[in-house]
Length: 57
Image (tube, rainbow, N blue to C red; front, side):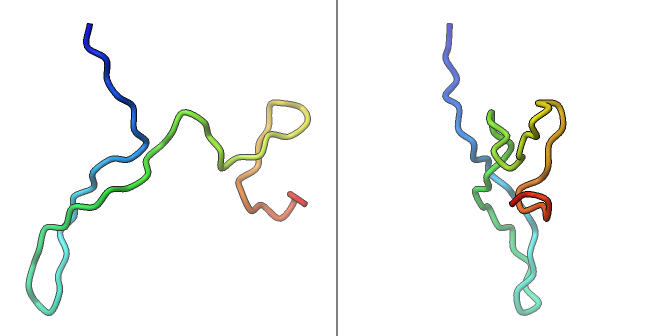
């Protein structure tokens, strides 16, 4: 059985223009990860708020 190494980064390919020249640009971006660490779980353990929400003190 082949093991797949998990990495939260994925290659992103985009087409960009610099000074009227078109280029293909490859970048590494952080994709969705196993732990959704940009959410704050409320005390009822059902509802969440986004990171930086005004209700989070």
